Picture (cartoon, rainbow, N blue to C red):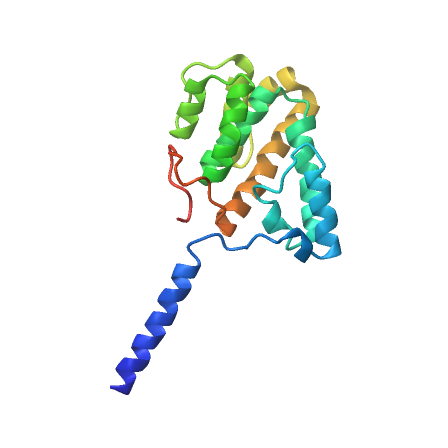
Length: 208
């Protein structure tokens, strides 16, 4: 009897822990509860072009120096890249789809469409399919990004096309936007940062 009671109590405790972890794992840190290092980074992010701490930044504040270095890279690849915003956002939503990051998809699809990406291309990416009709630069970004994730590199043919279209600086910016949003998406997935509950998505959120 005692053994059964003990087992029931353990099961209840484990069940309670599982329930507790279904929501966002890293609670938002109020500004007045931040350490000086955290507050400095938060102020830098909120006073920059993003204007808010949405997305991965609350989680990153657990490691302030890392947060500072990552947010500076992110500011460059999103706002100062040599790539056209249309194809830059295309690479971002491809990353969101690959990682099953619904928050990132929700945040960047409107930006991609605003930048001029055809909604049909967005829909195909969301479904994990190759878009049927793309402009030349979009087709290069799709193939480059697809090969990079699938093959862990790119072949000479797509490298030559990317070099001709974007130059060496553009190739590095394309690699960087993919890599940065890999980190963003992984953070969002691990921290369970959720998108609005009433939004429908073309793919299931990873790990949920």
